[in-house]
Image (cartoon, rainbow, N blue to C red):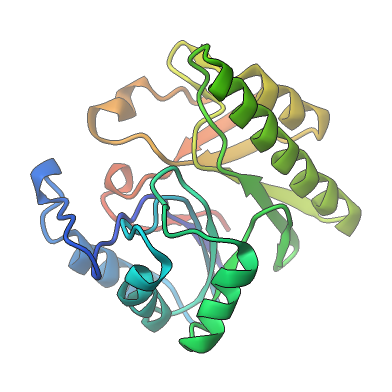
Length: 225
């Protein structure tokens, strides 16, 4: 019963948003082939954001059917391009109506996987605007609630964010402070693609940072446990 993670699948099976222009040739087939080769039905895969290019929830159905057919339990967090993401209630109703039974959401909550408490939030990168400040404070609250719930389980938290809390020369202090408050030692994140991989930093103030965007992993799920 292993735990895997892979971010930024950017599926567009119900929309027309091909990733070939970014060099992602046959990426859907590659994701499927690697996933089926590695993941068993008893395993769990965490996907921290940018799952689908769909703009509306109903447009994401083919993407979720694709995910449902893959082995394992799947846990999703929200990314900046997940515009299909409605309220948790509506998404869960959508799952029920369409028999999407292997997918769960992390959003203001924590989900128990094996002996770990999976938690996290989308995050954000600060550019100095007032809008950014508001978003960061909201995301900080979500991260804190998720970690608080994880702490109450008595299990070790397994933390995911879509945006990196620190990257290259940029640091979002609000997220780092929350992570340190809860003694988080490792964070898995996505959002970064292509040559940006080279600017990723392996740790910040004692917190290990692991980039797991699908293209940076050659579309192979990363083994956590």
